Image 1 (tube, helix red, strand yellow):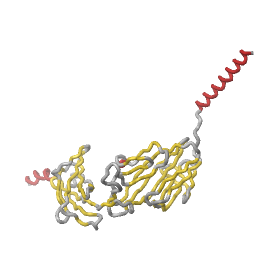
Image 2: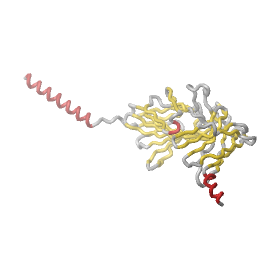
Image 3: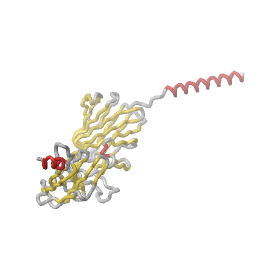
Length: 312
């Protein structure tokens, strides 16, 4: 009993992570003799030590033993396959659990965008005097079984995975998806997203401003990927929109704000999303300018009267 009591604390200080590596593009075929290492995150510090390396056996399994049982540490099994890094699910040990399984799924690659679709698009439109406010939310889905690497994979400066056309004359572009902020660049009127896309879906969002001196704006955007449905939300009751395939869906409430909702379905590459946005508010003339103009007019009248009287 004394030996058991002495050894329990020592046993509780270590943990084990095991799992398998399999190819999600090849009917979950197990991959043998592939290197697996642990990416370790402790607070704001990263430990990338080559001592945390295993090679999968003939059944595609790996196992890391005697790991520090520290609840402040996150462990990620990591595999490089076809020059792309894949991670397993994060593991955090606790006093209750010291053994975890975290599998790593890898995929073959493709540069073809034929399996990329925009499952859903939310377009929010509002207006202030002299400008149109636009916010876009996309749910993008890779419906295939391979990682989509996009175009120019071997040319980092020109590489991109997804592209999003932007309105002419846009200003103040802001990326709203935090994890995407380091994966985008803008050239001309196109936003390029450079993060590789494994099978599954991701959300991407941004907002921008389009200056306008008129009370009507034509919003045009070419369709690059199939869009299942585009929902357009307008909070300003004075604004109206018209366009091919646009259907009014009535009032819609989001987090206490009432919107007029419109819908466009089944947009395909080669088509164009065309919206005529009408009744934009004009630029207001501030009270200070009216007072200043009034003062100038009175001064001019007074000066003219004084000059006329002095001549007479």
